[in-house]
Structure formats: structure tokens, C-alpha cells
Amino acid sequence: MNALIENARNVVFDIGGVLLTFQPETYISRLATGEARSRVTCDMLYGSPMWEQLDGGLITEEEMARHAARSAGDESLWPQVLPAIQRYHELLEPMPAAALIPQLRALGKRVYVLSNYGPAPFARAEERFRDLFSQVDGMVISGREKISKPDPRIFRLLLERYHLDAGQTVFIDDRAVNVEGARKAGLSGIVYTGMDALLL
Image (cartoon, rainbow, N blue to C red; front, top):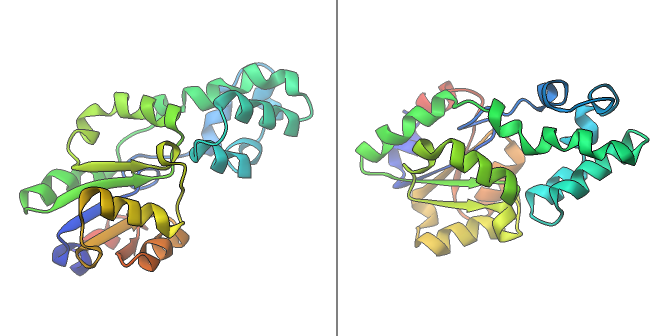
């Protein structure tokens, strides 16, 4: 096991790309309907700065769909875009890192989730993956807090809420910029590039 995890008392996981798959390049073709399926691109929706606002709980799903439709040149397409926001949780699958949670807890470690996730999309994912999320000791979700990674404040919120020592806490994320945000808040960090990053 990675030495940072082995020596930590608290292990904090990101969700998308770490605990659950996130493959947005496939979602529009599989979930959007009508003309939106061919006219709206991944970048117009999931790659848009507006998606970060959805993750931050600052806009609604309808506003996100309208923005993507406008980017495609026809705002009236927004109802055809909406399923790609409201149903992508149906296409998520657990990743190998999720299997580490019970192992870490068996070692006496506490396990947490900290993720950028819109409040409504996360509520659906949380319901679908109840068995996974019921295993963790606590969660901080950007859309609920109106603070997003890599802002160090969201990491400090986690530490304060669950009374964690930053020096005994390691954060795992697939984006280096988010790991750097954790480090600025005093946590250790691991950039997830596959299971070798956690096991070696």
C-alpha cells in the first residue's frame, strides 16, 4: 500500500474517476435525445465552465441544459439535453479503488468522500450506490457547500466538520490541481492514475 495511505489515519476519496467511473464523452450519444444528440458536444456540456457552476450548486440542471443548447445554436433543444444531466448516474460503475474502503476500515482508518458534484446529480448517485456511500464516515459535496475544489476552504471544511488532523489525512483525486488544493490546506495528496498509485 502507498506509504501515505499506510501512515494516514484518515483517507479521503474523490468520486468521479476514482470511486466511480466518469466517461462524459459517451453520455450525450447515449442519453440526449433528438437533434441534441448530434449537435451538442461533450465540451458544450461537461467541459463548459457552467458545469463547474452546476457542481458548485450555483445553477440548476435546467440552466445547464439551456446553456449547452445555446452553445449548439438552438436553446429550444434544452429538453433534449436534460437527460444527459439527469440520467448519467445510470451509466456510472464502481472503480477498483472502491474495493479499498472496507479494507481501510478494517485497518482502523476512517474514510471520507470529498467531491465536486451538483446537489441533484449527487443525490441520484448516492441513492444508486447506497452500499458504497454507506461505508464512509462522512462526505463533503461541493454542490451542498457552495465551495468547490481546488479551493482550500473545502478541505478545511472537511477537517473542521469531522475533527480531523490535516497531518494525518491523505486525499486522493484524479486531478493534480485538486490534490494541490488539498496540500495547501495541509493534507497529504495522491494523484490517482490507477490502482498502482494507491498500492505501491
